Amino acid sequence: MASRERLEAAIAAASEWLAERYDIAEFKARDRREPGRREKMRAERALMRDVARLFRRMAAAIRQRLEAYPRPAAKAETPDPMGDEWWDEQEAALRAILLRHMGRGASGGGRIFQAAVGVSIDPAAFNKQASKWVQSEYTKLSKTISDGVSDELRKQLQEFITTPGTTVGDVMERLGLETSHAEMIAITEITRAYAEGQRIAGEELQKDYPDLTVREYWFTNNDEIVCEICRPLNGTSVLLQENFTVQDKDGNTIAEIPRPPAHPRCRCWSQTELDV
Ligand SMILES: [Zn+2]
Image (cartoon, rainbow, N blue to C red; front, side):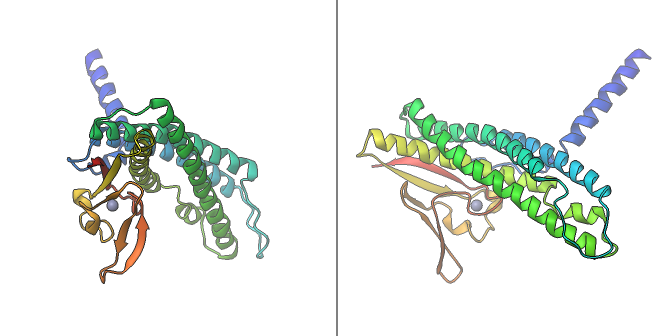
């Protein structure tokens, strides 16, 4: 009897574990040829888990506030129901998550670079540049994301007030706090942090050995091979300081980008080698 109970408890715990991670199981595997593939997949999952958890907490707080929100009869000014301080806290929480995970991602990129070129770079110099990049990139991104949710909430609140029949659920659906958004952030930013980590390592190497040139190759994830933007870039290369050129179907240049990601959810990767 006791062992049966233990078994049931174990099954319950396992299903809870699965349910919690259900969204994460949706992740596609990264390409088998990709260096650091498993490490990047783990990093994607960990980042998504933390961002999704924050988004869920934010959504719960907003929902609770909206449910108590007095719906005026006429169109009026729509005050922010959460207040500046609350938004600042959310932005800071998101920034802390991003800085932590992306610092690791950039370091991972640095390790991949060193393994690829077979040369060690000064870890202190690398860390200094990497942390500068991470700070600036992810301070910006956390603000963009938090401002995006806040602007959308204000817009949806107008709808909520002026359109009879609009529910709190309708408002919540459009805020961008769903797990798929957390997943998108995780995939795109892990791609970016690893690619930029390699770039930073390459630049550090070139500072120490000015006559070395580093070449960067673009590789497209197998299941992304249908992506119009990335497919033509697969296997092409440029020098570290140069940009890849994105062309449309007619061969017109539509963008120049230094390295992956080319778009949200891009799971391309760059590989570096010494140009001799
Ligand atoms: Zn791509």
